[in-house]
Image 1 (cartoon, helix red, strand yellow):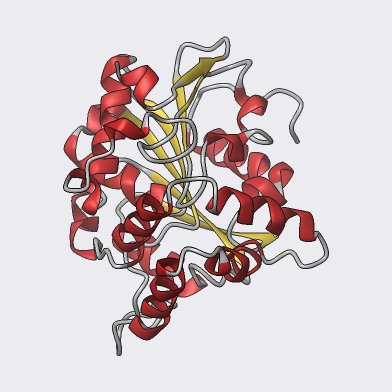
Image 2 (cartoon, rainbow, N blue to C red):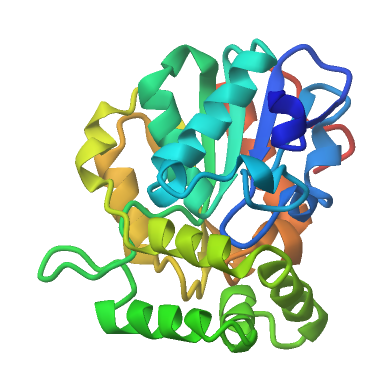
Length: 275
């Protein structure tokens, strides 16, 4: 059953669905500071990709999840099971692209795409594209992951979070990175960091918001600017929040920016009590 496979949790009083999709190495608990703000007016949908969180790891298939396509199918399966139409999709990091790919396949499922730190390609491709990483950087990360000693998580978590004055946030992210099967996590890393979906951006028809953090080591501002220039009906908003996980480090600003976008582009109600 899909709902059990992906550990789907649904709550809220609204009729329109608002789907929250986690990023690499994380699970749905990362949305605990943001999703409840919208529960009065939306039907909140939280889930874990197969291999992450409390999903059914017995459903993991190496061939299916060797690219982002398998994760796109997870999302669409959840949408079909819940009979989702015209949803507001909120995706962090790689889930931004997973959501875009899903919207190309089944555009009626989504009414708005809200992406936090998305990237269509993490690798630099000079002279016209700066994704933030050289191939050697990512191969070095995979080498650390192959050792399965947690060193990669201790290295990556502070870089991703980038809030040195709050070390507990990096510690939480490090634990999240290490909570799943290391082989599955490594394969998800390959599917994430070595993907390139720049060519499909013109096929996206759903309106989108790109939330870009300040001083994000994973997706620099050049990536957000590139996405905005290649996505029709898109808007780029640069947040004051630093790092790559503002829904954890700066949830109030994250909720506020989502509200502002919905107020500008949608007649649906805003999250109560958030200014």
